[in-house]
Image (cartoon, helix red, strand yellow):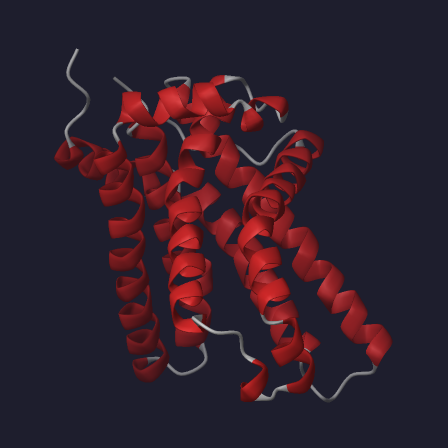
Length: 243
C-alpha cells in the first residue's frame, strides 16, 4: 500500500490542528504560562526563591507540553482523528519526563564529545588551547547532532507503536526498520523541512502581531499561533507513520 502523500498529510494536519478550539487554547495557556514564568525567572525584580518557583513552573509546563505532544503522536498512530483531551495527567507527565530523558540520552554523546574536546578552552577561554583540526571536529559534531535530531522522530514513532514503552526507545534494530519503512528522505523532508518553514512562519506572525497589536499581540503567539504550529508539526509526524 502506498503511503499517504505529503500533500494529504499537510491538509489533514492543518484541519486537525484547528479541529478543537478548546484544546488549542488549553495547550496555548500551558505555553503562555511557561513563557511568562520563564520571562519572570530572569526578571531582576524578584528574589532567588521566587525565581526558583518560576523556574519550577517552566519545567512542569514543559513536561506537560512534551507529554501532550507525544499523546498526539500516539493517538495519531492508533488512527485517531481527534485532538487528545487534557486528561490522565499522571500518564501525560510520565510521557513528558520520559521524552526529556530520551533527549538528554540521545544528545549526550555530541555534548560529551564537544565538552571534552573543548574543556581547556571552556575553562580558560584562550583560543590558543583549542585543539588542532577544530573546524573539522566542529563540523563532525554538528553533523552528528543534526543526524540525531533528524532520526529522533523515528524513535518517537517506534515508541508510539509500542504504546509509549521506554525500553523500545533503544531497540535500535527496530528503529532502523522504522526509518526504512517510513523512508529516510521522507523523515528528513518532513521533520527538518517543516521545522524550518514553521519556525519562519512563527517568527513572521509573532513579530507582525506584536507590532500591530500592542499587549494583545504579545499574548496571541503563545495562546494560538504556537500551539497550532506545534500540533500541526506533531500531527504530520504521526501521519508519516501511517500507511
